[in-house]
Image 1 (cartoon, rainbow, N blue to C red):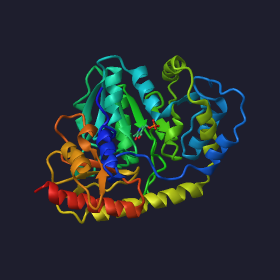
Image 2 (tube, rainbow, N blue to C red):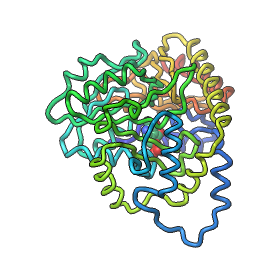
Image 3 (cartoon, helix red, strand yellow):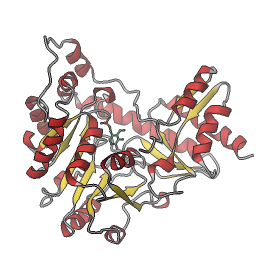
Image 4 (cartoon, rainbow, N blue to C red):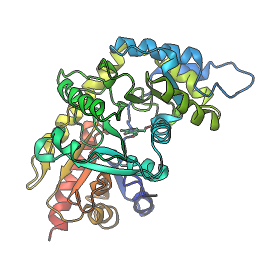
Length: 386
Ligand SMILES: Cc1ncc(COP(=O)(O)O)c(C=O)c1O
């Protein structure tokens, strides 16, 4: 199993903190946004005698309410098309397990969410990357690039929309191009849409589930983690209109018995979160993104693709090895006792030796902290490169 590039530097960070340094954590997508009160209240007011297992596919009322939430997003599914999982992470594992055998292949545009590498390794599946480039703002590579990679072992294409770590938002036309490929080659299209709400600049999100005629091919991965800043709830879901697939996923769900019961109660309540909560959150992230980008642009030799969604961006730095740089920042550098923790981007690629001069930054901190953090990065580059 590959170590997560997002978490592997934690021991160095702990050591730095022991030595009295403060750290701006730009490495992990743990938002500092408050969880909706309505969800926290549901836990406080929960009056149950036995914290029992729930149904393996998740509580029926919760699934019914999720389908109502989806219909507001023009995604028309019933509760039977939904299996509640322990985070989007488990939904991804169930999807991999249900559609692929050992040695099968999955095509993923890279850079991609680093744990796709881990889930593929755990499932014995080979990731076949198709490279999207920072120079192109990480747009979908040309269709021919996908078709060249399809072999008899290819079972699926996986996209993340909007993207972690790129912040890229796929257009309706791009989704339709992918739809044409998966139909032609009889593949699955897995779309990780856990950042659906986080779309900026007046753009709209187009889900794979909105594409008609693709019902048997699409699998959507979702989660409450980011939407409601409920990462610790560990509730997600897998959605598909392919009945055979859902029956298979259910066998995986039965093997692990139940998704978390208490967290489903909170997640069900969270669905009542008013739109005003999201409006405020989006406004906050747009401001953070704009601050981050404009501060980074002040540093010589830095390349950035402006994110259109989610809350991450890939930053290319004038260095050779971001693993070394990220560790050095924690071990050997500070500005008045403060340093930063970043995720080296190599782990977001499965192609060897790509992205070694890149880092991923999660803009999950307040504007003032982001300004200080980028200043530390700027000073660090001056010292590191000498
Ligand atoms: C793209 C993407 N998919 C899935 C997940 C899994 O999240 P969770 O298991 O908390 O739902 C994450 C978490 O950061 C993510 O960024």
